[in-house]
Length: 284
Image 1 (cartoon, rainbow, N blue to C red):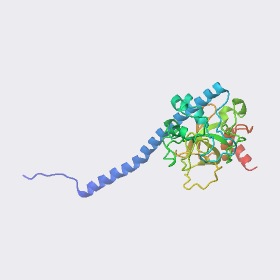
Image 2 (image 1 turned 60 degrees about the vertical axis):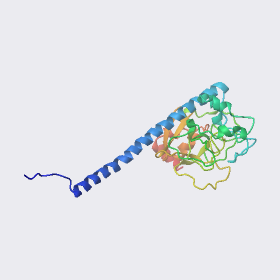
Image 3 (image 1 turned 30 degrees about the horizontal axis):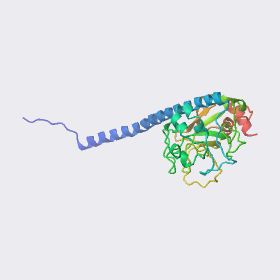
C-alpha cells in the first residue's frame, strides 16, 4: 500500500516566508510609533514637576528662579564665570535635597567643588527620546528655560522669564501665565556645558522656530544661544507658566511661537485668532 505524504513545496515555503516578512515590515513602524508615544508621555510627565517646582519657588521667594548669574552680559558659552542656573535653584523642590546641598554657590558652577554635581546624569531633566548629547559632560539637560522670543544673546534685558541676573515675578508676566512659555526641550548639542550651566545648555529662544536637525559642526559665536527642538515626531513639549504642557507642531506659525516666549508683548494671543486674521496680519 502506498502512503501519500503531504509537504510544502519550495515555492510555497518561499511564499510563506515572504508574507511573514511583509507582515513584520508593516508591524515595525507601528511598534516604533507606540514606543515613541510612550517616550513622549514620559517626557511630558517630567515637565510637570518642574512646573510645580517653579510655582513653589515663587511662593517661597516671591520670584521665579533667575535664569543665570554672571558679572556682566551677554553670557558666552564658555566654562568660565558664575553661570549658576535656574535648574539648580529648584532641585530641593524636585525632591532632590541631597544634590541641592552639594552645590557650592560661592564659586563658579565649573569650579572643581561643583564637578561632582555638574557631571551627574539626573534623569529628571532628560527626555527618553533624546540621544547622547555631549562628549564633554555626562550630565546634560533636555529641558531649557526660555529667555527671549528671538535669537538674542542671554542678557539682562531679555523678554523671556529666565534671563541674566534678573528677578522675574508673576506681576512681571503681564501677558498671563497661561500664555507665557517657561520651559521647553532642546536637541543634543556637542558644545553643551552641563545641566547646571546657565548658558545655552539650559537656556534657549524661539529664533529659529522648532529645530529638527542637530548641529553637526558648531561654528556659532560664543554668544549665540539657539532654538528649542526635540527628537519627537514633528513637535516639541512646552511648559507654560500656568503649569500646563502643550505639544507644539514644528509647523507652528513663527509669530505665534515668539509671542508665547515673550512675557510682556501685550499683543492679542495669535493662537486664539482665526486663520483669516492671522493671514491678514502676516501680509501687513
